[in-house]
Length: 303
Length: 255
Image 1 (cartoon, rainbow over the protein chains, first blue to last red):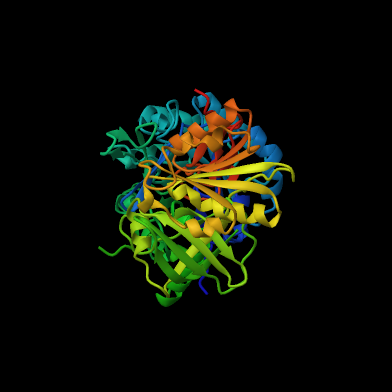
Image 2 (image 1 turned 90 degrees about the vertical axis):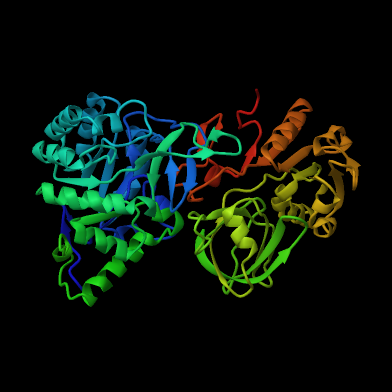
């Protein structure tokens, strides 16, 4: 049994496996399938200050080895979360990270302040990379000066571990990772979904109501691996790998490429036990390859 | 709600594009309510990445078998049609809500079109078990498309429409006089959305209770992806967890 503990910039995870935001609800939804407390961390659904209805149906299109979504951050707002969800999930024996979203810098800051006062929340994942909202989201994460500003302002009020979730929809993701590091992020997580679209040739209509959406699943894994590798060489803060991880081998590949930890996303829709299966599989992989510690696997890529 | 490997006991071809999968559980089946569905994983098919939501058509608790009535429409269902007896099939079930039953005096009309007849069999079974009055109205394109009429006839009176008049009443299901009669108090409907909207309009204009079973595309099926939403008077809700059965008064279908 290898030591699975990893440090993601001051926050210690019992193992490197987290669930990706938006793929496991707020935790209770997964209880019929997995022991949520077994996770390295639970990253809950993207949360905003106020209730959001999201985008109209249809919001999803299946694509080769993946899917597009344009959910658009549907959530009931932070007050609902605090009153209805938090009392239950705070009892999980694992780290809880809230994925934070806003339409303005002020909204990001206000939400971060509110969350900073929640005792049993361990981290914030600053989402400046959602491709499915008109205001905010990716608009912050694809423009360097705006990224810099929102991370700086959030860092000032954030009393939790701060992970910044990066958009792949940029020319040079390393520039954004460096800005996050310079502005005091504890880690960066990447990648969020790739902007894509789907067309129905029969009806000549776009499949998604919003025309474009975010691509996830194994289809994006090579892109995500490449970006994790580039970013891990460009910054000293830990990198969290995300993008089409379906099994422990995928997870190991991301760690070898430079990830300190990983998030399992789309896989959870097909295999609701994927994240916990990966914890076990990763342990087996480490044992078979004579690694005593999971953290020793990070960045071992042999060119 | 659980994840389980079932064994495919039979894959039986019906008329045209329809087939029935009988799945055997090696455990004891939980209660499965009319209207509920399963999320079936299609393994090793290039163009079927996600699970497929399929209505439960029939349940045999004695034999621990779930039957799924499926229409070939895309890569996933085409692959399912070719599955061979004996293989393992992974499903998440039972998912979703159920139809709301009326009081003992209420007479029901079950209205199904095409593959939408699937969830109505379990409903008919339950109504029969409770000795409630009901009729089943099923609409098909033509006589060659009629599926599982015998199974429905075992439950109660079955009325059939065909578009071309090759069997039963000639016309669309929404033309059938039964819908415009006072022989029923409640309608339960499943079929293509234009048909459900038309039936809902008839029910609304006649002041009848009406529930429809929606078939929105889904990723997860258990309420985490938020992809299958339907616009309701309560805002966007998941078809998989708040539905698939909705009262028409909840839906924003009036246009």
